[in-house]
Amino acid sequence: MIPPPTPVILSSHRHSGSRQARQAVGHKLWGLVLLAWALNPDCRNSGVGRRGVHLVKMTETKPPPALAKSDAVVIVGAGIFGLSTALHLAQRGYTNVTVFDKQPYHETLYSYFKGCDAASADLNKIVRSAYGTQTEYQELALEAARGWEAWNADLAAGGPDSVPPGMSSADRVFIRNANVSLSDGDSLPAFERATLEAAKAAGHAGTHLLTTDPHDVALAEALGLAFAVDPFNHRAGRGKRSVGVIETTGGTAVADKACRYALHRASRAGVRFVLHPTAGRLVSLTTSGGGGGGGGVETADGRAHAARLVVLACGAWTPSVLAPRLDGLCEATAGSVAMLRLPRASPLFDRFAPDSFPTWQYRLRDGADGGLYGFARDDDGWLKIGYRGTKYTNYQASTGEDGGERSVPVTRWSDQPPAAGPTVEAIPEQARKVIQRFLDDHLPELGEAGIGIEVTRLCWYTDSFDNHFVVDYVPGMTPADGETAVMVATGGSGHAFKFLPNIGNWVVDVIEGVGLDRPAIKAWRWRTPAPGAPVANKLMEGSHGPRAFGNVPMANGTEWAKGAV
Image (cartoon, helix red, strand yellow):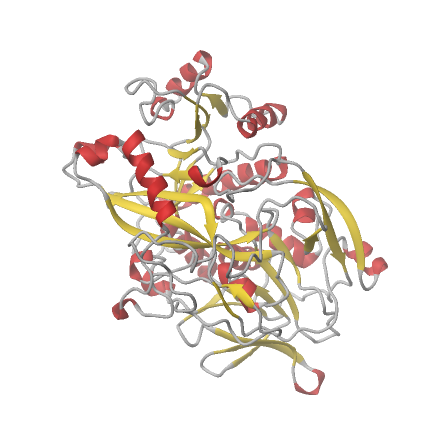
């Protein structure tokens, strides 16, 4: 297991808001703000109540001094938040940006099979703009979709600035093979109804199609997306009832290649990357140095790196890095992933090709017995299915200021080079059971062909209590001139990857104090749930909670040994 880094040292108060308003507010102001509950179609917590509205306490504090374009900016983490922020900082003219990560991504190429254990290091991720009533994410996702198309065009054009080493102009980072959200029965769930209404109200008619509407089906066929209408042959071949929404602008992000592309673009734009198990590993963070000067980060090789701004984008490791400051706001939770491999010679290789099979979700908000999603096979024949009906935790004693227990990631490669062998391969038995039942009931042709689950993994996310991101300065500090400001870009809650092309632009807006009254940025402020208010994700249940490893049977027939990971 990767131990949490040395506790960060923070001082004074800070927060975002419009720059003028924050200066007028002064130190600490608590306000009650109504936020719509952000339902997350990629992953839902089991046992969560129905969609509603809840009260959230926001923290308003004094802003940091403005950054000069030449000031040193350190980003910790080369996942999607870190990559996108680095790229957009460079595009806005910042000339002294460095990204640190313990993973040598320039060698491992964001491949899970080569020892990468971050959520961003994956085969594929969902790209969709279906967000029910959450129109701020709908529009953000459509903006991202334009970015994905632009990146594909840039790759296709070729040239050293566009094509990363090991990739070619024939590669794609986004496959527009549609995204379909399905449920059993004949009645469309409330979330999908809200998605249809929101898309229509925003002028996006024709982008979201009902699978049981003859007119919409004809439109899908005209767009070359007939395969997305009934991808599991529910109605045509198996006599099962199903209904869903096809998103014609959605599809699949080729996750590893997309990260490699973003890293390459950022490097060519002048961003420095330190990707190394020791030289890139954070061990401590300070906001001020000796003699009242600025602080920065220290890495495992013993070197100190001064910075005017540190952006923590450490993915599921962020809550333990900042313990206890993110307690109750964000927590590391594990999703369960199973992969099957299709032989190239099998007829099923073409059946599940991305040009004939969509990205999909099934009964996504139906608790522990639902929460499934999946993809077309990749170039190597891997067919991936994920389960987030239950979001698991791994509570361990923390090295944070209070020494409390917190959920920390443990993965196949936890603190081990690939040559040392895996640490954790199993997924919980509940996850395996739900995935296998789905395969048996909806994709029996795989089992009939002798194709079964070959690889399982835990994929660790950073869940916020309301599924909104957290992009904000860390409260509890007001840096004096010359001292280091600290902010976080985290809380992806299982639905952030699709924003790789554009989320960094919004993070830089927060850094610069631009457009902070926009609904999305307001939702991303540092916050806590009001007492007794409903939440999307239950956090901090502890090692005795029902989702904690140690209380959960694993699929290999063993139980997670408490404290042994």
